[in-house]
Structures are given as C-alpha cells and as structure tokens.
Image (tube, rainbow, N blue to C red; front, side, top):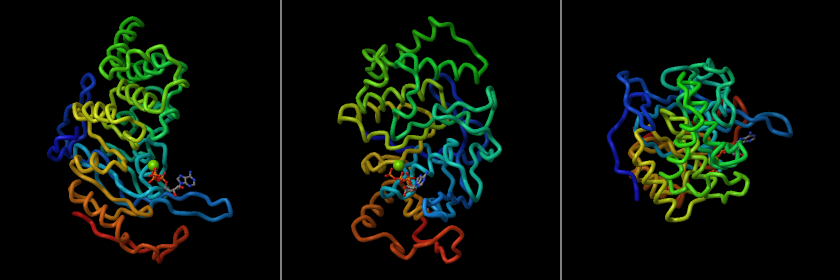
Amino acid sequence: MFFRRSTRQPAPQQVQGEQAVSASTSMPALELESVSVFTELPEGGHRRILKDVSLQFTAKRTAVLGLNGSGKSTLLGLFNGLTHPDEGIVRVNGVDTLEAPSRDSKGASSRAGSQGAFEGVGMLFAQPEAQLIMPTVAEDIDLSLRRAAAVEGSALSGEQRRERIRELLRERGLEHLENQSVFTLSGGEKQLVALTSVLAARPQILLLDEPTTLLDLRNRARLLKHLESLDQMLVLSTHDLDLAASCDEAVIIHDGRLLAQGDAAQLVQQYRTWCAEGFPNEGADIEDAGDSTDTAGGVHGR
Ligand SMILES: Nc1ncnc2c1ncn2[C@@H]1O[C@H](COP(=O)(O)OP(=O)(O)OP(=O)(O)O)[C@@H](O)[C@H]1O
Ligand SMILES: [Mg+2]
C-alpha cells in the first residue's frame, strides 16, 4: 500500500477535525533560507551538520532521503523547534521560527496559548519513547487532546475525551492498548501510539521521522493507508525507498547538504545510483565551522 501521488499543494492548511483543508494563501508552508546548524565538538571547535540549506516544501507529501548521519532528523527538527538554526532562517507558514516560542518533546509551546510558528506542526520521532510522556496510552493521548483544546480555546468533558481516545485507538486497531503502560509497549506499538497521540493534537503539518522502521509488514501497510487518508501536508524522513518513491516530491541530503530536490520516483532512482556509485563531491568536504572552502555539491532537481 503506497500513496497515490498527488499534485503540488502550495498552501498552508487549517485543520477541521482530524483533517486539514488548504488556506487561501500560496506561501510555502515550510521553508529554509541558507540554514546551517553547528554542533560543538568535545575536543573543541564546531562541526556543521547542516550546511547552507535552502529549500521550500510545497508538495502534499515529501520524502527526505539520505545516508545515516546525513542530517535528515536535524532538518525535520528545524520545523518543530527541536533544532535551532545557527545561520539562516527557518519559516513555518511564513513565520520565522526564531521569533516563535520553544517547544518540549510533546510539541507544547513554552508559552501557553501562544500562536507561535510551531503550533500547527506535529512530529513523530524516530524514537517514539521520547514523546510518550504519560504513564498510560490513554493518558498520553488525553494530554494531546487537552493541549489541542487549550490552543483552540475549546473544551471537551472527561467523558467526551475518553470516547475520543477510544475512537482514535479503534481507528488504528489499538483499542486493546488503552490502559497499558507506555513503558511496556513494543517498539512498533510505541510508534503507532505516538502517531495516534500526535494526530490527536490535530496538526496542520505532520513531520514523520522514519515512521515505518519499527513496524511489521501489516502495520506498515496500515500506517501507510492511514497516512494516505490524511489531508495534512506530510514530510517524512525514511530509508524505505518504496515509501519514498510513492511521495510527490523528495529531497536528498548528503553530508548536511541539499543535493537534489524534485520528483520523488526520479530522485529515488538517483539516490540508488549515488548509493551504489558514490555521491557528488564525496570525500572533498572535510571542513570546520565557517570554512569558506566548503563547496556546494550535486544536482538540484529544480
Ligand atoms: N546534538 C548533537 N551533537 C553532536 N552531533 C550531532 C547532534 N545531533 C546530530 N549530530 C550529528 O549530526 C549528524 C546528522 O544527524 P541526524 O540525526 O540528523 O542524521 P540522520 O540523517 O537523521 O541519520 P539517520 O538516518 O541515522 O537517522 C550525525 O553525524 C550526528 O552524529
Ligand atoms: Mg534520523
């Protein structure tokens, strides 16, 4: 089960129920302008883990491809506030994220009720235990429901929330996990419960970091079917090349650089070739922070 490839979706979205509808403006929903991210090295100095990346995500579903350690999770985290740009500008729905409040691992704004740039962005982490913060499955989803209600200024009674939790779990075949401790879930169950919790907050944009890695074949198919049914804009990092090829667009990140952006099926082919034969400028890019010899490599699909 893969996505039906869809046309470009340039507009940010507003959410109705669990679904989202396009708004009238045509600004790119997610945008990086000359963004670099540095980390401190234990021995001193810096390493640049994202290097002067400029891109716009406008497609309904975009796959982020790249080798282990290439910078995919770092890139996704920029749109969720988990990673901060050391250079350049990150915009979500046109808003510079450095002007928005910071977020915790549950996606909660540090300023209650703030309409910061990240408010409409939900993220499924590659390690889902990092975002399951309540003792039981039901309590974790309940927290997301209450946070969404607080942001929207609406209120559900305890009974309404319990019913909603059961409905959300039922939709994913997870109803038997309702009262289970999040610590005792299997890896795949954690991933599915974390996704349920993220969607309970009704995000406008969904970032998914390797959403299928922990799942068996049947749950992978269920997850993809579920993602297919969502109206939200999706950006997913994945090593699952069949899933990537079924997206509308893809980007290839290599050693912190954007190598290519374009049609997903074509870029998956390109990625396979580079994996087999070597990436452009491979080995020519040993650099330190601010190294002016740091050359941009590769092919841009557009
Ligand atoms: N906080 C940090 N401190 C030091 N190095 C970091 C930090 N975060 C990321 N890195 C390094 O940055 C590089 C990119 O990491 P990132 O997690 O974005 O890679 P990735 O493309 O998601 O890889 P994978 O496919 O293995 O998940 C890696 O070499 C990683 O070791
Ligand atoms: Mg990663």
